[in-house]
Amino acid sequence: MPDMKRKMIFVPAGGLANRIRATLSAIALAGQTGIELKVIWFRDWALHAAFRDLFVPRRLPGKVRIVEASASDLLVFDRPRQKNFHVPALFQKLLFRSCLYEHQIDALRTQGFDFEGWAKRGNVYMASYLPFYAYPDALLHEVFRPVPQIEEVIGKRISAFSAYTVGVHIRRTDNALSIEHSPLEAFFGCLDKEQAAHSDLCIYLATDSEEVKQAMRTRYGERIVCAESKADRSTTEGIREGIADLWTLAHTRKIYGSFHSSFSELAAELGRIPLVVVKR
Image (tube, rainbow, N blue to C red; front, side, top):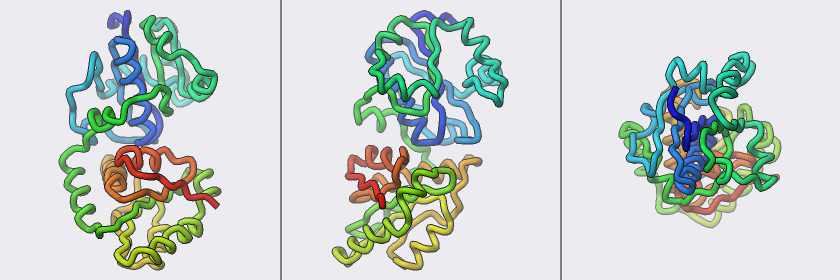
């Protein structure tokens, strides 16, 4: 096993936006504390794609590496859970001075936990789907750049924009809070006002619902620009579509986003543009 002194193993969890923001937190923390950071990228049901198939390898700041998970990593460094019978926890207790898991992070943030002090002592492991440490805006663009195939798709979608284009992200499927607090009618209310104010309005729509696509096209017709394929995070192509959506949203004037959606938040952060969280 590698020497873990002054080292942190970090496993980003969750979907695309969650992983990106959590990884940036870990990189910023490593930069501040001077520790060596190894980010291990696992493929699972929430994001079934390798890092190299999504993003261009970059020269990362400090002592930071992002690596694809190996077969041995599944046994030793994966997040302990029912799926793997919590076996990795046995190894992690032996290998690391301290471990923080995803179910602990939110409470630790709220309590003002000293992540810097914890990391400086080295020999630590963390898994998170939440951003837990502040990172500079520039770091997002420095670390994550889509592969050329995705950038080509992004360019084609942007070329369909009018002079006044707004982004809309409507999250459905497994996000109950978004469904409850950001109903389709609330988006209609916002976009009807935009349409009345801007004759050249174009709407870039990112959604995981075919029903939403149809409803938006019925109401706004050719003003809608969106992906033709169905959203599917279980395939690499599906995740690539998600990245194309994220970066394309970032090129709009502003984003009407869903409640409790890290995807909406990250798109606005990426483009440094306003985010309007649509609620009842």
